Image (cartoon, rainbow, N blue to C red; front, side, top):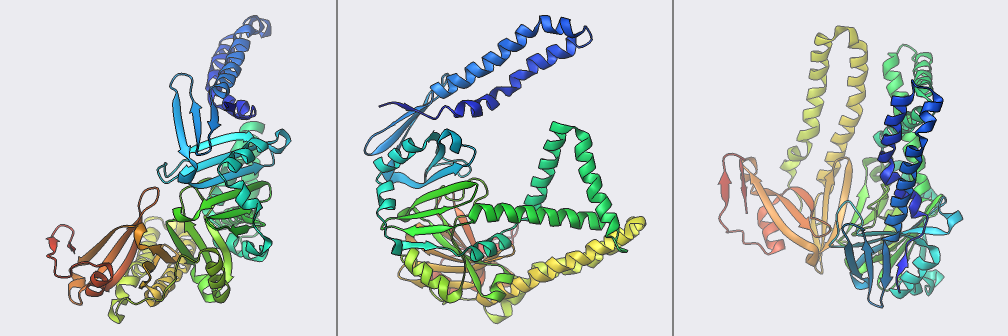
Length: 491
């Protein structure tokens, strides 16, 4: 039986054809000097354009239809170039059901479907359906019954305090600043540029009032970053509030959100790896957050693929045992030697030396900006020293462990410490790289590539080459290819 998406998609389709409004806009510019009545005589052109936009939106909605069988869902779309997709239920890695508050008066929800064969950036299929139709589709795939048959003992609901901690550690200053800037600009476009100017002027005035000897420009930037942080934190809190995860025999069900209620269904054997993350701050506090890599989960709206928002060491291990017992976390058996610490701290040490040098050069070139440059240079010392401490922590925990074909990889990336648990079957490639400096103690950098929507690279620094070869079944006697250009040799 052929079914169509919810008619509310017609309004979304209208946005695709708004560029056609350039026709009445250009016509208005030609007739604006001739007077209102001259413009009104040609208003029929504007009406035709508006009707044409509406007709295209309705036609696009009419040409998208779907039907499902006991084994797959089939989707057809397009009126000039028709595309047909058939997605078997067993191949679905994740299903994302989104229930935003602005769709609720119409009884509509958004259903997003993903498989391992899809795009990294976009979902395999997106359907806006009536809620009853979405539930029926999930029931055809045997998904909704599993969710409704679960007992309360199988449900893990995170305390909202842990959700607050997750929101704090995942808050992005620059994402918030970007959101704030776009919001002010859009308000200015709607209500006039004067509104946007007043908002920025108010921020600048606040900066002058609280400067207290600090350059107002620096205070303005600090106020802007603070507002960006607050906005980003609020957005994260709204996304993850009331987080709940349920383990079924073959699936994980994840729900949460306030204004936009989200429900994920993740097929367990499609999970590529488990990623336990810590920042330096949460490591000091003994708090862990756990994520999974699975096609579709966390792909849209900056949602992070979390399964444990935050927990202490003992608690998070218990939660992992209940939610993902197939991923066996092991202690490291291979780690860097004591003298390789320089390999870990060379980057932050370089930044630490470059900061005063850059300050001196800029002060010579821009003496009138010396006070602002000094403040910025001092502020940069904070993240640099923080980065240095994190790299020391990375050196103390970095390495590889293995237990029953599950590899535990410990490394850092950016300002985050990662503990990745991946099954041997999910590893696509292992590559060892040895620089000239590493030849003395026969160490190497290890790059492990895991499957997914594209390959994910895990970089572990300065591990003993012989032990790495034994762990992954490589031949340590294999000849090396040496390149003077890259100054490395590879297994």
